[in-house]
Amino acid sequence: MSEPKLPAAPASIQKGVPLKLVLDLGAVSQLGLNLKMVHATFDAEAFEKDCMNGIEELALKDRGYHIAAVLKNHLPNYYTEAIGILLASLTPPLSQTTDLGLSGMFYMPHISFIERYGLDISYNNQKDPFDISMRAQYELTKRFTAEFSIRAFIANQPKRTFDQLYLWMNDPDPHVRRLCSEGTRPRLPWASKLVDLAKDPSPSLPILELLKNDPDLYVRRSVANHLGDIAKDHMDLALDLCENWLTDASKELKWVIRHALRNPAKKKIIRALDIRLRAKP
Image (cartoon, rainbow, N blue to C red; front, side):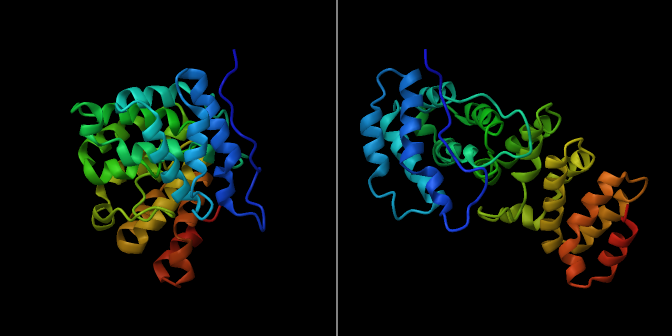
């Protein structure tokens, strides 16, 4: 029996080639085939036709939302069942955190589906879909990233979401640990600002404290970028954290500190320059 596959995709962004093309006909066709493999009544041809209708003018993220809307129309009208089909169609989890290429963007429609519909009780027979959505994002972040979809849950149900993230930050999978830091960034690129976390980043601090010494650079880089976001709204807090982290810091943690403060240093903020100097390996 055939197994779900990823479509062909470039190893990196190519000059002169729009990034949106990773979600073009090849990806749509493969998605339809993957779903047909696990859900025999899925009409892959009609799905492909509906996806391609009007997709040409859409940018990458809008293509993800567009395909997600088409998925909703072609999957069962019950979120739990629809998510079960999507998860059954997944390829194996990523086995590394470097040289990932662009193939994972194939899962942007899946993430968009959860972002748009994963809190909708009316789409789930009046049953709370929160736990189902969390399990789905846990699986998808191991294949792409759920950093965009998780933000809808942080914004709408912050305590429940952070309670889950506090468990995931100890997960053995680095992609899951990274989600805890990256998804909670107040100013994540390509995503809407998390206004409450920009005002008060304290819910994220336990995550950063734990992951600052993560064994995987993939995770530590996210911590540094997150702290750089915090510095844009709470400079003193970011500097205080870096100052505290300097005590007995490993060379890996010193890199995190320097990376986190690179923008304040460019602005010639004296304390940031001093901390970065002291964080040299």
